[in-house]
Length: 172
Image (cartoon, rainbow, N blue to C red):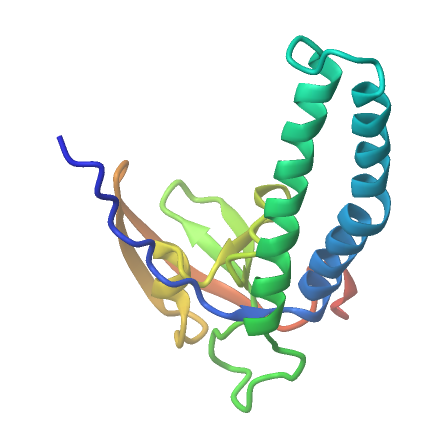
């Protein structure tokens, strides 16, 4: 049996200004607050003596490796990301950053925002432009119908709303 793992598909390098701020805040927290605290805990645990059976030392070192891995990832990722802070020239079509209201096949409406892969948040209904639905929505107009194939089956949607402002700030 081979241990070969196919390389991951490249992610889109787009991010909203809010998403960039969140990643920078996370990087700052990990590097300036969390890592020094864990480093001190590891140092204190090491001073207790036998490190081979010292759970605080072992788990502290593991946590430091996790923090360092995430810090490396965030630094590299922030270097390649393009912050999209301008509206597209044609706001009648679905592009990055759009809030899209969809009418589903079970006769409900749901609103999604198309964001980069670093900002996905199901609680906020943020979906990636790299997702199946995100790719199907890109470039579409209001009232267009979309059909996507997922592992759970074929789904049909109709675009009934499109905006580049969050739903709560839109004027009625």
